[in-house]
Structures are given as structure tokens and as C-alpha cells.
Length: 80
Image (tube, rainbow, N blue to C red; front, side):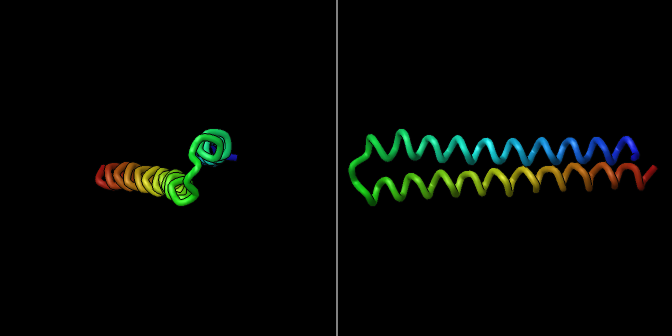
């Protein structure tokens, strides 16, 4: 296996684990903190959904940044 392919698999695996851990942390935070301290159901729903939306936004911007960096590197290599 090529070294670059191995590195890519390691990086993508690390990103997947990181995203999973962030989601798990958000779920624990919502369950332990928000559900136990806020009594208003509507407010709990808004806060919980906002945190999950934040997780989706993190995924989007992370992959957008990766694609941007990768395309910039390919453009630089192509010019040489």
C-alpha cells in the first residue's frame, strides 16, 4: 500500500472518530445538563437541536476546508 494512501486512511479515520466523539459529547451534555436543569420543554428542544445543528455545521466546514486545502495543493502541483 502506498504511503500516501495509508496516511489518507489514517487521517480520515481520525476525523471520523473525532466527529463521533463530538456527537457523543453533545448527546451527553444535552442529556445530563440541559434535560436536568431546564424545565421548559420548548427551550430544551431549541437548545438541543441547536447543538446538533452545530455538529452538522462542524462536519460541513471541516470537509469544506479539507477539500479547499486539497484542491489548492493539487493546483500548486499542477502548475509546477
